[in-house]
Image (cartoon, rainbow, N blue to C red; front, side, top):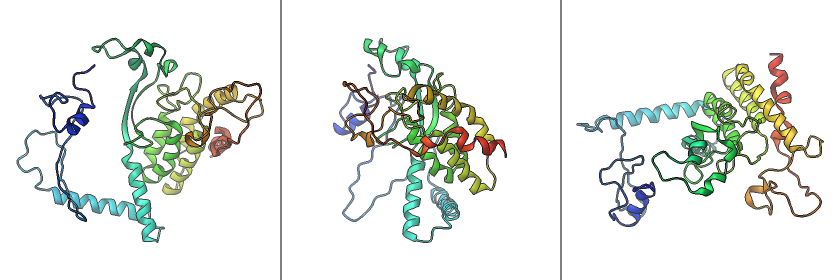
Length: 310
């Protein structure tokens, strides 16, 4: 175990500055700033921060107000154009806060599955149970991208179908970023060789509703409406991979051969008595409604023909 693990910052603050939790040389992969302030009832306290690659700055905040005010004007201009058709001031504020939440949840996500299973070179040999650990069949997966997290504070991990829904909102803020999110999940260092899209960090091999083709088409439409022209090259770039994923669904999850897919992690966000991914110990089958918008949207029906006749 590392002498100064990442939880050391938390332990240092909670213990009231007890030694032994953080590196006294002030080096490492994590850093934190600590401020002790008393905030009277009904009042607020502001803290000015500035990141710099220079160790010593003579006047680090000399132009702080100028830069800050300039960024405020730029942000207001950007959102004023984006929200020009929203007339209710309260709705404008709510939507802008929602947009801010989406932008805030961008995060660099690094996960080298093969490296994790083997253990770090200079660390102790991994626990033997890791040999049969989760994501064992996803050793090819090597993620090192800025992704939209479900919640960067509470749920800072990768989840494919959350990401697909995120892109519909992100497309109005940054269409290029939204398209990149959808495309990167289909790259060879994410997608399984059998055509499955990775589900989420704790079990990439689990099954979520196939909303990726639907999200791809909706992002295309949003981008087209914003910019006046559809990005057909984007559709062409992801079409083949989505067909591979559709084939995986047909071959692996259409048990009755009637084009109704089943299984996977659903259950109204953990309140169902079964996820649907594990079989029951009785003879028979459990039927329940599992229709999702994306299930009715295959790559061909969504955008195969529109791209062909463009």
